[in-house]
Length: 140
Length: 286
Image 1 (cartoon, rainbow over the protein chains, first blue to last red):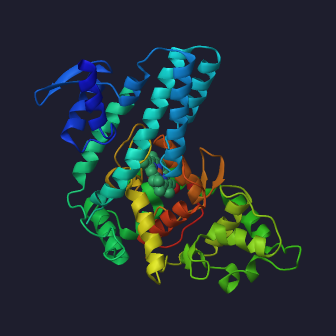
Image 2 (image 1 turned 90 degrees about the vertical axis):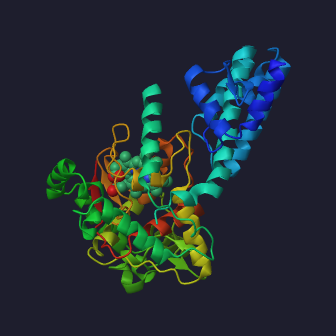
């Protein structure tokens, strides 16, 4: 049950860097204060402070899952680079995830892939957000 | 890391608050008005720093910060870029293998023309920066292109700026295509990027003269006038777009391409904002 709700919460959260929506603000605040795996109540509903990537990575650690997560993270990175909004640490996260996969450290690899994929998703969200909202920062 | 984050969160809240009147139009080709943008930008700074003369913005952060201005003035007594100007002059005057030279590629033999760059080139349908024009000149004469960020291209650019000192920036936006490029540059300037989620404007408009970590960002007004710059941190001369990449990396964003369309448009916007100020490059910075 808890799992379903947290998944919904995570999907609702369009972006962690962008806090326009009141839910996102609440989520970001809770996440910043308590880290992942923390549950909180918002508008009468219980949510958990996990990113969707972390939820996706919370499966059994094996070669197949680690390989799939790394592939998804790499794909997302290609997409964020295509809109020119990549983040600098992502490349090394992917590299480390690849190395961990090679040496059979599946859990480590999966966590790194989740982090990398989160970065890229945020970069893409940032791109869309900036398209819509940059004008609000222009002095008149 | 934690400190950085909370500092930034604090800073960005303050920054957002300090733009009291934000624009609601000017984000489409139909509504964007470069002259209105320029005067809004200038009056923003004049209201915030009423004691600073508009003409003083060519000195960047040193226009606002008295202590670092003193340091800088003593550096400028023996300008670290002097050698580069001399090298730049020699390179500029050296003939290509085909007997031609840079002077053949530019108006007025390339002397005293820095203030007209970047310029909209109608035949190429794009913004041409001074550095791009230098490399295009080389290629047109069968020479290899130079690297973009430092070294010879910066020296040539420095010499050309030096021959243009005190000329008034006069970037023109002659048609709608040029205006679209300007708008693209404007958007880039205000778009938040990188893991720290900050825009150029966060630091160089609202954040100008507000300490962010150990740094004191300068006003965007006058940003371009003194480039290329001999930076103590680099220990050498660098171009404006080298600095763009550095600032993007500082917010943990993958930097955009040097002399790519995005950076050329950004330079077009930034330089248009400084129209009316004089060329004072090359400059010296920390």
